[in-house]
Image (cartoon, rainbow, N blue to C red; front, top):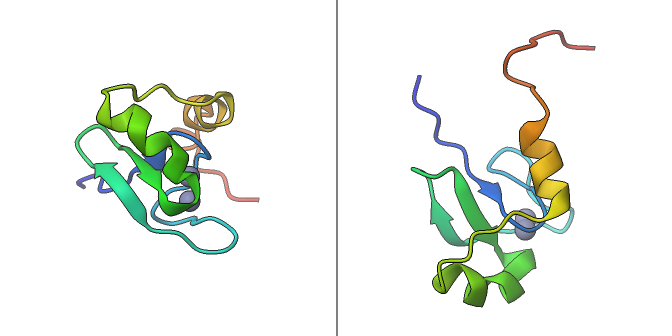
Length: 73
Ligand SMILES: [Zn+2]
Ligand SMILES: [Zn+2]
């Protein structure tokens, strides 16, 4: 299975869970699994500079092991 899922570096939204008001990718790199969504357009200039630093919230989301533990509550 190919993982065609990108996560926003700023807010942590992804292809399956968009922002509350809906969003789209302004920048996306599926190989890296990262992107900048339209709600976080202020990070585009960082992204274009090569700064794909994750925000604290996104880091927490990505470090939460959801793929390994498949129990659904
Ligand atoms: Zn975002
Ligand atoms: Zn978003």
